[in-house]
Length: 400
Image (cartoon, rainbow, N blue to C red; front, side, top):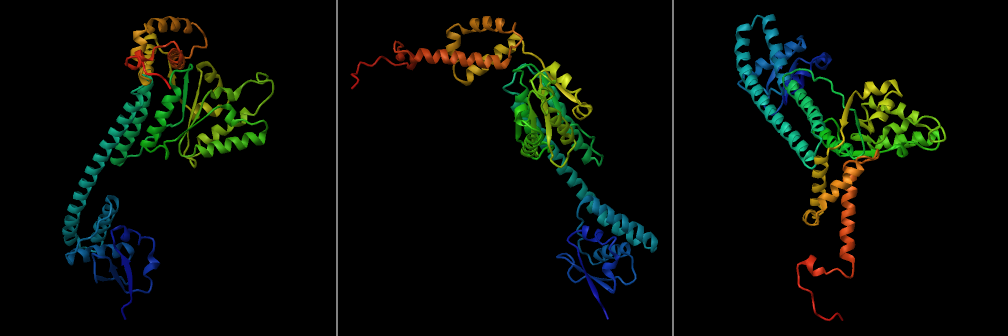
């Protein structure tokens, strides 16, 4: 009596799944190969090991002139290795050589096509990363050194992609960062670029960035602090959590008048930086000296945030370039130049840069808003001739 066990052979992974499942064939004398490719092909399996069954299936496919669906490269290579080993055991090396030659050519052609596709995908990935960086930094001036660091992140990830195609293990990367710099030096803008880049290269599952400060993380009692932290970490899950003025979490006792719960937040940060479950990337930002002190408040911070990006103060030329970029955004550049505003800007800038609270690009933004308000006040005066602004002749019609 012939008893058969069905074997699904959509591809060779169906064969490899048989290994370690010898009991699957208990009580059966034959295997019926079920797939669109095999039809009613049947082989004897009584008393045979799984590897011999795999070998006999491959030989049966070859002898019947049917195409063996190879599956992926790793699986097909493993099946061909089993054929080689079994043919030596049964002294059928000559016939097996023809089989291996036939399927080996298919395997090699598949391998070459697969590698060609991988190269195309790598080239597309590299182009997307360059485009994203170029787009993100196109409106930012004076931070070439920062851009170089961001490009290094992308380059390292791309290098790992290449290594994986070569069959090598990826080199571990640190994804958490510290950004240090004075106000208005571009920390938040660059953090947003990194959030989009990390999503593009697969470090995060979302391009979203959650921007928080001390008040978003610390409550007025322990329970409130823990609740706030949990909510923020959940909100940022899969994306980037950007903590501005992170050093304020470790304000010394007495500075605020009362002891707060910042230490608990810092401890939780150290934990979450290692928590792969949330897929969270954390960026800590703040002033240079304060951030150096902050990183010493917990022994786990420096090891989990080993990369620091330094944002230098802008020079006068860079700030002037930022000025004209902002004026262009609101279509006031021509009016500003016509009114000899550049000289006024330079004088005000020289005064502002002497102040310890100087805000770099943020100060320029405030200056442009001031210029805009001045222009608006002039237009709003009853004595202003609007025909000059609108490029028309004054109207002599009676207003009803």
